[in-house]
Image (tube, rainbow, N blue to C red; front, side, top):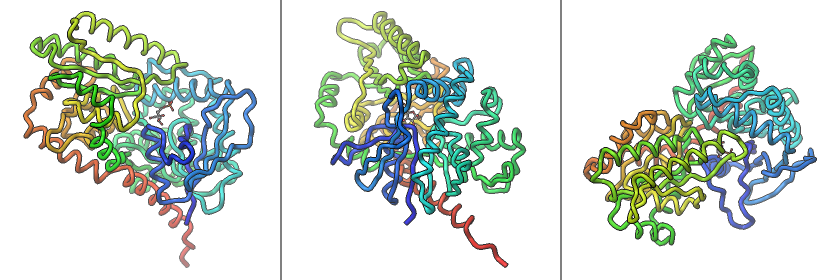
Length: 468
Ligand code: F6P
């Protein structure tokens, strides 16, 4: 059996003997990929040390070997906080105004990718297939090829791929486009993402389309396809059904009394549209005074990337917005917005989703958005809640029965909240059923199997002896 080598910036090593994996889409998804393979998971240890070693720390746990490297403070600042999260992240999310490009950050990003490749190359065996994840590691295949690694290498991009004009505004865009073509298979979340990258490679690098998503770029063949990431439907459903006994869930439900719960759960990131969503809730309360005191909006938003200035600024803005709305609209018996920055375990979230009549998922732009999928799966089949979903989330392509909204239009979002709260049970059921069925078919296992069989297939095709 081929060995699977996964590479990602963050690696979720389960605590010894627990078998559990850290929360988060990437971690759960990657764990799923290992069910069919023996494997190695390579990436950053999460530690920042003055003198990182060239030798990775190896941990063996539950059929998976973890190989972890540390970063220096300069690496972390330039590669992770700098180029990955202040240049690539805003550009990929169409936020040109927030992009901060610096040559030294780009040099740090390239240096860390080279360091990852050099450290990883010594661990690669001839039959391995290599699967690289996310925007931190765009040039990794190119670095590995430079070291003579000829194994199949696939890449999955978890976030959006923007239109060519947006991507090309990044000063390093040409280098990155050339580098990404060194992957044998490039997976994106949606068809629009595939079109954006394909068009850009054809226009900028004169790539030649070969049909069925294959392209010839600078004499090398690559393939670009969409593989929408799914969730562990069976596990999440089970957690939602059992969550009623959890203390936080029980007490939240008891505290609601007869009020209806509207829920939002996001990493505190400007792409998620948290302040814009709060303003939409405020608008809803202003235009529906009869609903004051009858609804509570719970926003859970764990802090993220706090050493990046744009995230610090966002945290301040959200605090102000919550204070202003609660101060202006609430009263001693009712606080309209409950805002929590603590991270909750997935089973607790599953229970809270199930208790919420409305799931408010309104990112300004999102590769997929797994919260939308989790909200749908957590609902009870007797009395499901309503999902309000941004049309700029990748998940909207698979969940068209949600109420789709433009997150930039707070009047439209406010109207959608009203529609959701008044929606009769028959309509809620009619919308929910096809969504949950699709999520069950297109779950995380389906996603990983599709990607890996396509990557394996590449190897079979490439290695076939030439016919006489
Ligand atoms: O969705 C993109 C992503 O980088 C995921 O890979 C990751 O789980 C999440 O954002 C959190 O980001 P960070 O690793 O920067 O905390």
